[in-house]
Each structure stands twice: as structure tokens, then as C-alpha cells.
Length: 384
Image 1 (cartoon, rainbow, N blue to C red):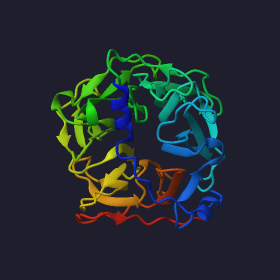
Image 2: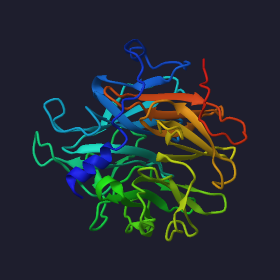
Image 3: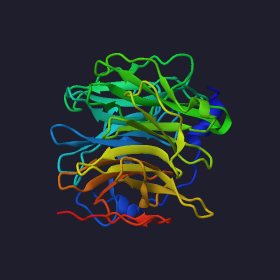
Image 4: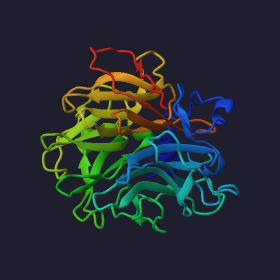
């Protein structure tokens, strides 16, 4: 992919700084639930710019979140960042009330970015991400490595493999911006995406399948390639109760998000359809009570088309999506959610802009509501 074109795609929609907390608020420790979002990582050893987080609960009860750490949206090699951007992790042992200091879990000579984390049924933790490569120190131009990468831990994230695995995806670039998803039949699915052309005017999603817990992977199975739409990043999937696999795909420009379905666990996919609203960086969570949460970077229908961190809820297996709900006014987003033991939900996302940090708070899923157009603010829960 052309470097300049890819650079424009990466920077699309990220140029506006969001409403960051004040310096006094940023200095407060990440402990306890407040009526303002908690900063679970900002500045310090993790870097000047922290973004693209993802969280999951481990079998031992811990909640872990991974994120990108560098000096801006794309981190070039420099004296301060000789290896460009890296992947960091924070951990909570008390349902998100307090968090550990960030630790770096992967940092090779490339700009390692957009990490997502999941734990498989065999206990292995896997982080999926992709990287940009600079030909030399101080170079301004870069290229994508063109394939997703996987990083593994077998001790609940205490230690990690020294080298990540670069997956084979063929002749065109495939990147990843979603968790690895394990299905009840043992199939492991990695959602991927491809984009090309100026502004991502032609782009589509896909999945890779593994039958051996991620040791080997089949070729990319495309989603929406023939639609001629800017489905330009960030595919995620969720299994519906009837065994159908449902995929959501981001779209660029003014195009709404789209979705597709698979009746054979990802081997083949239906044509993509309009989901009915705009959104970036989709992330699914199914609650124990059955609802499906879809968190995204969302956009208002007002003339300003302002972006914010948003939530939609489906109570009918992805047939309809209730909302929009506003998690936060910040544009950064890339939100993910974890259901807590008391039935409330922890949401983790980022701010965007200079000095961006990782935010979190918990909320209860609102009761079913009649349709509404403008975003409704979620009420943050306080905790002891």
C-alpha cells in the first residue's frame, strides 16, 4: 500500500483533540470510582500518547487492558522513542477500582499498534496487533508489514513471548483491529481488514480461521469485497444464539457501518448491509443477561457531525440497535467493555489528542427505551 495514502487513512478522523481532563485531574491516582472517568494510564513510563485500548477478563478474575504507547498517533523512531511505538498492559485485581502501573509487553524495532487481547479456553493469552516499519532511524516514511501479528502469554500475562508471530496473508495488506474470538466448536477467529486508495474509498473486511487454538491459520476469507464501499477498517464478530456469526464493519466518509452474517462459522459470508448508523472501531460484548453491547467511536447527526465515544444495545440478537448512548464526549474511542461481577459494565477507551491517556468507568445497562435520536449520556456508577 502507498505510504502516503496509508498515512492519510490512519490519521483520518483523529486530528481533533478531545476534551482531556485538566492537569489537576490527571494527577489524581487511578483509585476508586468517581463521577468523572478514571485515568487508568496517562504519561509516565508508558509514553506521551496512549491510545487504542482493549480489555478482557482472565480466568483468575483479573481484568487486563492493553494499549498503544508512543508520542503521537503514529510514532516515528527518535531519540526518545528509538523503537517507535510499543504495546503496554495494565491490570486490575478489584473489578476496575484500581490499576497497576503500565508495563511494556512488546517493543521491537517497528511501530507496534492497535493491540487487542483475549484469553482462550486453554488459558493462553493472545494479543493481536499490526506494525509499521521505518527503513532507518529518523526516517519519515514507513510501510505496513502487511499482516496481523500475534503475541502469546501462558501465565496470565506475567511474561510474554519475545517475538510476535507475523501471519501469512497473501499479496495484499491485511491488518487487524479486534480480539481473537474463540467459538464453542473450538474454531478461533481473527477479524481483519484491508483498505486501499485515497481516503479508503475501496475497503473491506475479512476473517482468518484456526482449528488448533491459533497455532496455524487458514487464508483470509473476505467480507464485503464486492460491495465497492469504504468499509475501511476494524471488523469485529459475535456469535448469535442461533449459531449465526455476525460481523460489524467500520465505514469511512459519511457511509454508515455495515454488517454481514455467516451460517457456517465464518467460512462464507452474506452480502454486507447498512447497519443504520455511523461508527468506527466496533467492539462486541454479550452480557450474561443476553444483551449484546456494541461500543464504537460514534457521530452525532447534528450539522457538526461531532464524534464521541458511543454505545448501542441489542436485545433481539442484532436485529435492532437501541441508542445512541454517549459514554464520553471524547473522540478517541476504540472502546471495549467487560461485564463485572455485580452485573455492571466496565468500559475502557482513550481520549485522543496531545497527551492522550486511557480512561475507564463503570455503568449499568439502561432499561429498554423507546427510540431516540440524540445521544443520551450514560450515568457513571460510584463504588466503595
